[in-house]
Image (cartoon, rainbow over all chains, first blue to last red; front, side):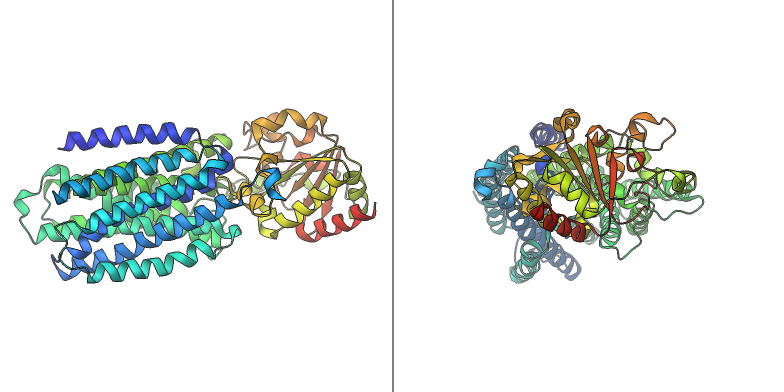
Amino acid sequence: MLILELYVFVLAGFVGFMVITKVPPLLHTPLMSATNAISGISLVGSIVAAGGQHSTLATLLGFVAVVCATTNIVGGFLITDRMLKMFKRKDEAK
Amino acid sequence: MRDYIVQFSYLVASVLFILGLRSLTHPDKARRGMQLAAIGMLVAICGTLINHEIIDYKWIIAGLVLGAAIGYPLGMWVPTTALPQRIAASLSFGALASALVGVAEYHNMMHGALEEVSRAKMAALGFEVMLGSLTVTGALMAFGKLQEVLPSRPITFKGQNLLNALLFVSAMVLLVTSIVNPANAYAFYGMIAISAVVGVLMVIPIGGADMPVVVSLLNSYCGLAAAATGFALGNSILIICGALDGASGFLLSILMSKAMNRSFANVLFGAFGGEQPTAAVTGGSALPIRAITAEDAAIQLAYAQRVIIIPGYGMAVAQAQHTVRELAELIEKRGGEVKYAIHPVAGRMPGHMNVLLAEANVPYDRLYDMDEINGEFSQTDVALVIGANDVVNPAARSDPSSPIYGMPILDADKAKHVIVLKRGMAAGFAGIENMLFHAPSTSMLFGDAKTSLTKLITEVKAA
């Protein structure tokens, strides 16, 4: 199982590297906020922790984690979109 | 069956995320791409909600609602000038989520069947909470520095690197201890505490101008923590997103370090600027400086054919991006051509200047990267430097004794005339004397960037 996960990690890292090398410096800030929003996927883990009913502590920690991750997802995608909306070509800027 | 639906939703989300990031290669496609990524996120969340392990939805819904309520203003209302600290804060949130999930998982294991805990799982959990807590406090420190709640100058003390090394080694020892003996809760929680301290100590010696590297590096750690969460929970979408985030942060840190001609280690342990000023001040005041009035500067700009504007952090501080655009439009109306030269480390995070100028409605095809525009300075009438310093310091090319020697710079000194808008004669963040300010072709226009620009606009209109 572990070796399979390592495969996924290494290959995804490769894909990430290939894709992100092509992002121009112009869009480096939106890139940061975009990866930030995407890493909010840890919500998936937080949800399971918050709803698993293992113990009060786990539920509480899971709840806080859900709040943090959701904040990043909502805030991250919104701010990325807001920024990308600002980048206009000359004919559009007027 | 249910598990297949969950896994399938993750697969869809992963593909949409990668497509979203890929769309960022071009500003025209980027918005649509990121909207697809957001849909991917929604799919993954809906997929997770039908997971059979979930018994109670009360806390989940409360968390989702509260998070959305906090996230909305963070996305819509934060001004672009505050973006660097906004990103630092969200890195801290992201890492906190990973660390807390790790602690919850550990707690559950401790109160469940401990015998079943494999070494590999414990190692993943260990890395997760270690990187997580280190990033939480590190990003908080970066936030404090960027928000100027904390002093943005490097904070150093004797034996700092030794202390950091000792703490790091002890965190590693505790990590190994808790892998060997997962039941040792002291080791596990001790490691979290020490990692949190390391995060603080790692960031406080780093100066404001080095923030682009630190923010990128923390971004990378945050991604790796998420990936470790994926390993611990056996969840492939977490591994994929963590790897994407980690790769992106790592790549940006490399680019930023290169743009400063320094290694990672140098940024993290060097405390640039902390030791330099004493050596740099020597002879500074003896060199000639030509101050210029707004009137004279405006005449140069009004009759210039080619103008290149070089924005720096000073422009962000003065919030002068809109005034800059107004001035540029005025010059264009008079028949001049205006381009913007953006240094990779201008500002406090990668791409900072581009976003500010885009916000001010400057068309993005006017924004040029360093390599694209450096050849054009020799045919430029006026290079207008607004609140930038080290990124135009010719000492980086010519003076091997300079701390910034070898750093790639914008060749502003090759323009026929250089006008520098600057508050006063204080040295830049690196505390290094800038020979450009003393060059015969350079005129200095002192004052707040926004006020100076407003004066320039009035004068150019009158010219």
